[in-house]
Amino acid sequence: MANAFQFRLARVQRIRELHEELARADFSAALSEANQAGQYVEFLRAEIAAARTNMGQVQSLGILDASTVLAKDKSVEAMLATLGPARQRHQELQRVAEVEREKWMERKADAQALEKLEKRHKDRHVAELAQAENEQQDEVAIGRAFRRAQADSENQKPEKGGTSPFSDLGDTPDRYSTDRPPAHSPL
Image (cartoon, rainbow, N blue to C red; front, side):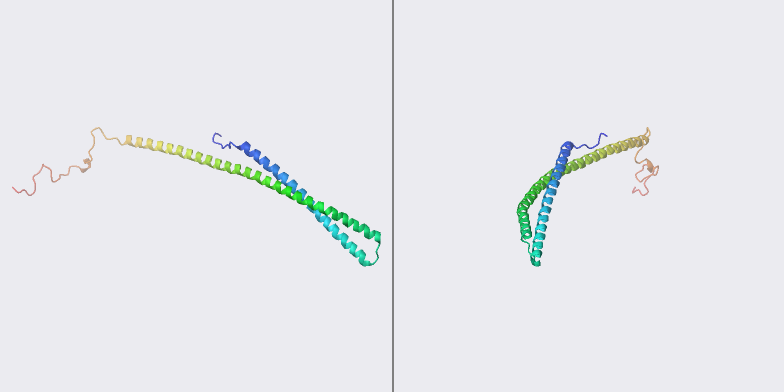
């Protein structure tokens, strides 16, 4: 169709959409990794709390096995030593995820800007088509009216002798007529 809308920046728009999709995928992956690191931190906290509770129960029973207590204590210390770096890794991965989110939002804004531009261009195109169609319809209507007026004027041409605007008055005498004498003459 000759009047079909075609956005001139469609290729650029598609590239921006692809960049937005890739940035969203990068953000999703970074967020997933940060969430996994957070889950690991929570797992370590729960294990440390469980180990401490278990040590307290063993000590409250009164039967103390030094090797068992030392093993559990070393286990808790090892988990505590792992917890610090795990927290740091979680925080770092959260920062990375936030950077990736910002990149995605920028790409998304770029893609949306071109979508808005495309909509404006499309609306303008539709308005131009409507205006052209209206002008064409006006021309057709004017042409019809002109032809109708010509046909009407050809049908109403006066006869060869011509007519006077006073011809419909007929033969009624008026007071200025010279055919008869005036009714009251002063002479």
